[in-house]
Length: 148
Picture 1 (cartoon, rainbow, N blue to C red):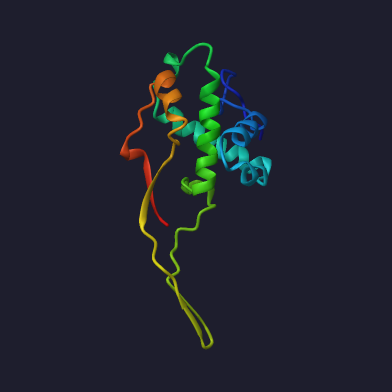
Picture 2 (picture 1 turned 90 degrees about the vertical axis):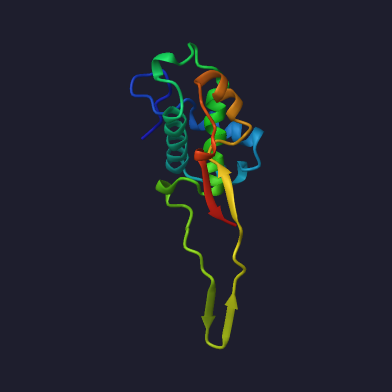
């Protein structure tokens, strides 16, 4: 199902997949990875990013009119950040089980256990626009912990 762009009735995105692809190619290092996704996966990541932004912003009645272009760009960068780091549980892209040791016959391998790291759902490059235009608040509660 195609995205419905704000401010249309029933909207679920601030940016189209085509425009998001342009932003991601121009402003991130994830363009090749993003371009390899199918349209359905791109839309899913964009919807998740939009929902995240909406849930951490001012009510819709307080959105700027017209919506600044940087909000859609921030959504695209957030979607790419999610895709690259496997942050959203609902996409099913990131496997969280940690294999520590494998054995096949006489061959056994034990893997290094990575350190815990924090990855903000909204990348720092996108946050200022959202803070200024959407009342978005970035805090440590919006950091997803994982293992390297």
